[in-house]
Image (cartoon, rainbow, N blue to C red; front, side, top):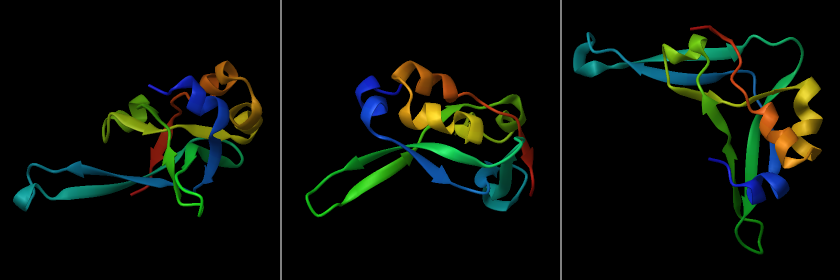
Length: 114
């Protein structure tokens, strides 16, 4: 669950071209995992919704990817997925109200590339 205060002040966009999930293959020796590359089915540029935090005065901090429940196209590999932000939703994620930002973090369809 996202804390409203963090969403209010600490939103960012994380550039990406795809992401990977690993699925355990029980039939493989030692239950070896199979890597799957995923990309959203979205027209135009897209990014991952992120949150950032600064820890110290020297600028040390962290960035995390916001996740949502998996779209059915992802659920065969994993139960959650990154929150994808298309160009049309980028402003709402970065500068909208908390409610507008939370409305952006929805599952989207993906294509399995590998």
